[in-house]
Image 1 (tube, rainbow, N blue to C red):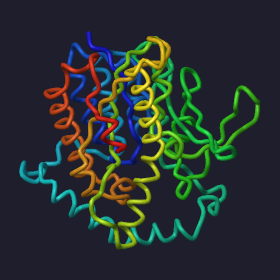
Image 2 (tube, helix red, strand yellow):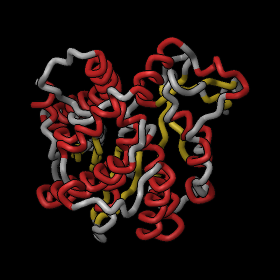
Image 3 (spheres, helix red, strand yellow):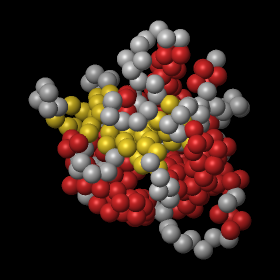
Length: 343
């Protein structure tokens, strides 16, 4: 049995790509997911996967993921022509149509001039009904993979990682709390007894990798990346500039942890640390930057049914390509050249 850890990035509706990746990984009977760390959409995917796996194994996990994304707006059978379902340029056209649509531009302008607190007692979190549907008896159970959910403490600016029984509806909502759209989620700190406010975990860990360094977990970390690391063109329109700011902000914490892993790898290779003193993390990445660069902040915030299904299909294909190329490397060597990434 090949045991791996998964690191699931946040990215709103683009998390449907991760849905597809997980759906494909579930086909591999000899691959076991030992632990999942997730932020925002990654936390939702992780909770669904964990609950389903703990309750009914692989098919339970698949069903729980399908149910999650059905609640998010995906449609199982959209009656789309095959050429349309696989057409990436059409995904880009849908993205641009959403970006420049009046409802989206108006809502975006309002979010920059107003606060979610302006609505007072009339404000509700639209994600709450979705997140409340999870079976938390299974999400917090000892069955299935270990699960870690990341959120950002507003007061201290530090990350908080929820695990075990601390994973609640509020913890997952905190992990997905964009401060321009949602009111901060308040959760008591069991150590200090103080009630703390939390924002999206992407600011401090998208997702946090360090929970996966525990001795009982395998060394392989497969990052499912849904925020493009590289965009060749300099953004010039207001929408493109805001989109790239969003991507850089939500990749920065992940890149810092990957740089630290690369540093430890060099120490191990040069025998500056004794064997077993520091964990030799093997890093892998599943991504589709070509598709993600066609999309934008608008498609993260607006769960368009066509794009959700297009993203799932892309995720399945990316996972298929990764397994064909690198399944034999799991447990043996990294398939991401971290030194080249940072040179």
